[in-house]
Image 1 (cartoon, rainbow over the protein chains, first blue to last red):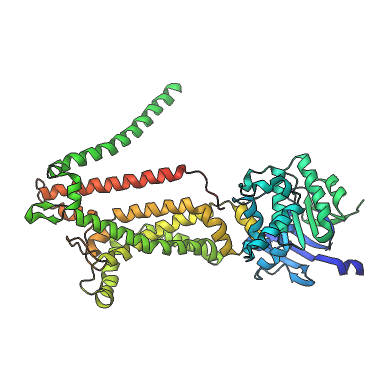
Image 2: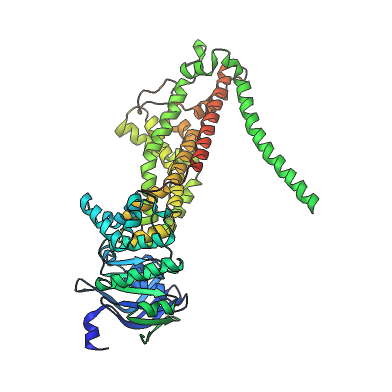
Length: 240
Length: 286
């Protein structure tokens, strides 16, 4: 590990292991995910990729049977936060570490309310501010022009690709420093997937992206750094 | 095999038709038995007039008021209590405590109401008498408090179930967006669980209306229409239990069929409401 890498690391894992009940899901992982880069993790399903993502926003603490060992930390606004601490409050951290799931998961409410929802959770009350932040977030995900006339429509009525971009917009509205993406295109058709890929390339400039993917091709197009996960062990791959 | 399955099919049809017919027959029987009373001026007149057998008045107005006020007061007390209990079990209690707590609540539903009544008679009623209401301590408030305790477990079980059935993808999304457990409950789980919560509420109301033992032992059984919650009252169910010892051919005895009809209609309306609610389109939180 070089000194330069150390300086720009956004997420750092050192001899990190993860158990779920009696199953060892992640084994002695050591890796740095650099800032403002797209780090990709590929590997077969069930190899622990999604679990690794759930460590990065402390979502693992919602699982009662999960246990962690070793070190995992994330640097937000210049400060390191321990990801292994089950007791630490996670709301603030998750506002700065967005997550996009494999299956688009818009909430059962209107398009506008979906994107405004994280602001509501964060206690933002100013209506004008909410409006403008929702709009700019939807513009960032290239969704605004398509749906600006139907902001009151139930978000679940959008197409799959639109739903996924809505979920990304929802994560972006809090201006996160890190965005975790769990196979965000696997439930989408080719065109919709290409749209998401293009979007990720644009986001990279001011957001650290961690992408879990099935497809090596996709990852080679997008990633600055590639890891392969296999049986809970993470190995670095050469980037092309 | 075809014959067997056809025979079974007919058998099941007969069973279903039989129970449906029984339900209808029960209603007709009640109406038939109450007919002599209706000749006095119909069900509405009975509902309006007081109970005074000495003066030839067999109205059940006081019992209707007694039943409704005890049941709704019990619901008023029990609902927030149960909602809080369900919140605690699903969201706020430490993880290892949640399952034992729910099991405890399940156990509570199985306790015979007479046991609740005894507990009330020895603990709640003396307290009422000495510190709150005075009098005998047998009144609407005592009965409603006890009834609230009786129906709370039913409500808690329904509420917990409704909250837990909210798709985890929604609560997980809210968690990943930085929602605290309380926010997830209020903004996501509660709006989606609302139909189930209403369901539990209506069932609890049915149970409160139908309960006999608590009102019989705790409510005081006064035949005058109650004017405040510290008055004693007689419920429709308690009235049936009390009058059933009277002479079978008397009008007094026949009044219990009017009570039966009312309770029957009330239950039918509750069940129909539940059915209608079940058909409502999926609600969304926005």
